[in-house]
Image 1: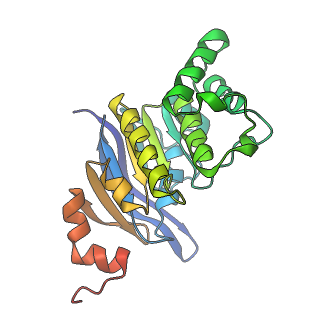
Image 2 (image 1 turned 180 degrees about the horizontal axis):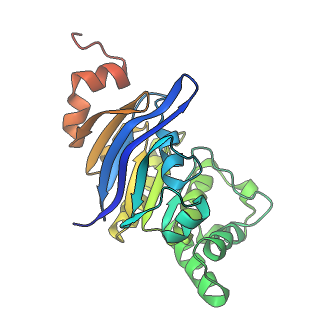
Image 3 (image 1 turned 60 degrees about the vertical axis):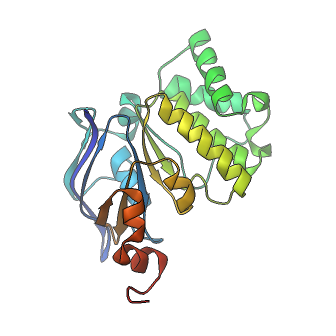
Length: 242
């Protein structure tokens, strides 16, 4: 299967703080990869390096067969990268539909009826169609997270980067969101998902990587990774000999 994303020895530091330390991995087209690690491990910084909002001190980012390391975030988005943010920040004074249209026109380059039809289709997919004319500032947390998904999907991504999108949700809301993400993956979108709600992550991903202090410390089949004593000590705070 073709590789859609490849990170090659990415490094980034801010003074004494290292957020990426020789970080390398590949993502196959259509694959779902989970990313876990303690707070401050560099997970969101990794997304910033992938999408171009942060430039590496060293290393390369390859996307869809192209070296995109020197490309802007806007250019990478137009090539097919899209992301959600840990804290949803929609245009609160605009409707849900208007938020979606911004992504469809500015990121996907659609216009007119084509853009409108695409947005309506995505809103239906993310269970927000009945909120299309609602101001984004009046949405619940789950609805705002679904709007994050909507805006990302309206960009017509080949690669979807999800940053703790299940955080703060009830169990029922989390279950509903997981099903939506499974449906998105079923449409062929490749996914990298950072998440602390591990049971949600394990319901979707094929593979896990663990990051600590910007360095990849483990990679493999999800259940095996979660049983690793090193991962339990670093991520879960469980002593190896406990």
